[in-house]
Amino acid sequence: MSDTTPRVAQGDEYVVLFSGGPFDGQTERRISTDGTWDDEVTVIVSQEGIDTQLVYAAKSAVDVGHEVHVTYIWDQLDSEELEDPMERNDR
Image (cartoon, rainbow, N blue to C red; front, side):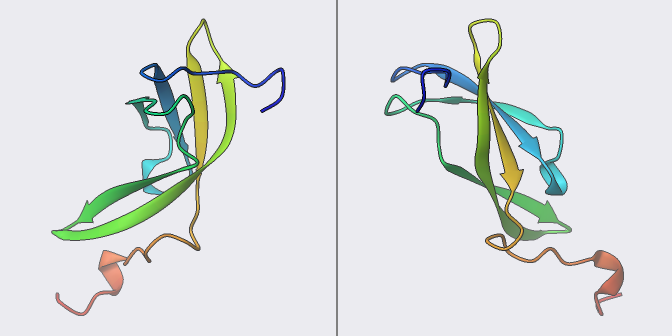
């Protein structure tokens, strides 16, 4: 981390900002368990009862009003493939 990189302490809360993919624009709050934020976050999206794991990788972090906001970018290559419901043969 450089001098301009925000810091979180163990037990501090930080804001996750999702960019790209099905979670684009959504946010959630996480607790730092080791004094850093996660390098990547895996989330589960459910489409008509089928669960798919999506990977989001940390891209940048900023301090906004004494709160750390970490932007995570959708890693489409490391994520499971999303199935387009219109292309499925179960209809």
